[in-house]
Amino acid sequence: MKVLVFVNSLTLSRVLLSIMFYLTTVFYPKWIVNQILLFAVIFLTDFFDGKLARQYKVETKAGAVFDVVADVFFVIISFTALIRNNFLPFWILPVAILKFAEFWITSLITVKTQREFKRVFVFDKLGKAAALLLYSLSIVSVLAFVIFPKPTAISLIIVYCTLVTLMSVISSAHRISSCIGQ
Image (cartoon, rainbow, N blue to C red; front, side, top):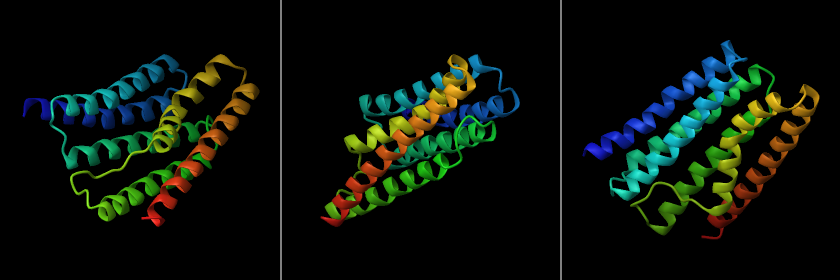
């Protein structure tokens, strides 16, 4: 029970840290080190909450939903802050929202069709790659502006956002075709 509470606390901390990332990015955009540290802690809490839940066999459907909601929350709130500061193009936010919506819907369809009611979400390699690219986009954009001159950073971010979009479309097409084929 204590492990489950700890795992859920890690997930909850990601939500609170995401809010801190937003506030730091919007109101203190020059505090780059803080943004990088916050991202690192957010990433680590995401990594360890699932790993600990599996290791100690305290996985729950509610925990799986909470974990994905915390991920979506981080991506949306960090993208919003970075778009506001002109670090990301606006069009990447709808891409992220649509990808997560597709993931949620195709998971529900697959779980229902395969009658695997023990799990909530269905993960696949393409989807994991797309999610990792989306998740990492926040830190990539911050680092691009630190490392490169503004015009170069903008160009690199546009290329990265295009890659993220292509990977999201390919992943979504694969998942949707899998659902149709069931």
